[in-house]
Length: 423
Image 1 (cartoon, rainbow, N blue to C red):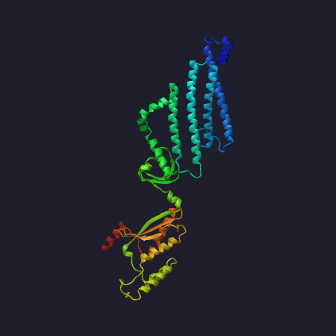
Image 2 (image 1 turned 30 degrees about the horizontal axis):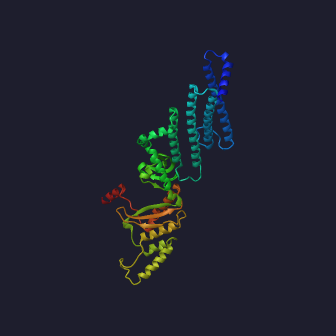
C-alpha cells in the first residue's frame, strides 16, 4: 500500500510538476487539501439530500427547520450530524491515501478530523436523545419516570467523557491517565455538579415513590407554586401557575421540603367542598306547629318531619309540655341541617359514594358555623366553583324560610341605625 501511494504521488508530481512553480510539494499538499474539501462537501450533500428524501416518506410532519422539535426535524438533524461524522472518517482515509505517513500535514489533518468526529458523534447522541424525549412527551399516557432528567444526565456524562477523550487525543495520551488524575479533583467536581447530582438523586426518588409526574397539580407555597407541572428536568421542575406565570423549583427541594400533589383528587373523580355558613345565634329557636306545617310542604322535609314528630309525640306523651324544658322539640337549625343533607343527596353534581355530611361546629363570636362537607362528581375547576356557588346561593336564600339569619359583623350602616334609634 505504501509503495502504491508513493508511486501515485510521484506520478502526480511528475504530471503537474511542469505546471507548478517552485516547491511543487507545497502545491501538492494544497491540491490534496482542495480535493479533500471538495470530496467532503459532495459527500455531505449526497447524504443530506438522501436522508431528507428518506425521512420525508417516513414522517407525516413536514421538515421545517433543524431547530424545530418534531421527530422529523430531529431525525433530519441526527442524519446531518451523522453525515459530518462520516465526512470526517472519509477525510482521514483520503488523507492517508494521498499524503505520506509521518508528515506534519497528515498529522494536522488527523488531529483536526479526530476532534471533528468526536464533536459530531456527541451531537448525534444529543439528537438521538432529543428524539426519545419528544416521543415520550407525545405519548398519551406520560410515564411517572422523569425521562428528561435521565436524558440530561446521560448528556452530561457523555459531554465529560467526550471532553476527556478529546484532550487525550490532543495530548496523544491514554484517556486512563486523565481519568486517574481526576481523583484529586473529585471535591471540585462534586462542588461544580452539586445541583446535577442532587437533581438526579431526587428524580430517582420521585420516580421510585411515584411522588410527582408531568401534568400533576402541585402546590408548594414556599416557592409560590400552585399549578400544573409542565417539566421535570435534571435540576429544576417547572410549574405553570393558574395565573399563567412559571415557577421554577429545584428538583431536590421536592425531596427536602414538603409539597401538596393534587393527583389523588384528580384520579378519584371528586373534589371536596368544605365551607361553612355562620348563623346568628339569637335566631336559633324551637319551631311551633304552624311553622312545622309550612316546612312539611317541602318535599325534602316531609318524611323527616313526619317521622320525627311521630317519635317525639310518643316520647312526650307523659310529659308536661307547657314547660319548654320538658320533652323534645324540633329546632329550626336542626331541621335546616337535615334539609341540607337531603338536598346534597339528591343533587346531580354531588358524588354520592364519597363523604357527605352537614355538621355543626363550635360556636364562636362569629356565630354558629354549619359546615358543608361533601364532594362534587367533577374535578374541573370552573365546574367545581360553579357547583359550590350554586349550593351556597341556595342556602343563603332559604335561611328566612327556617327563620334563621346569617351572621355579619357590624357595619357602618348598623352603627348609624343604632345612633339614630337612640336619638
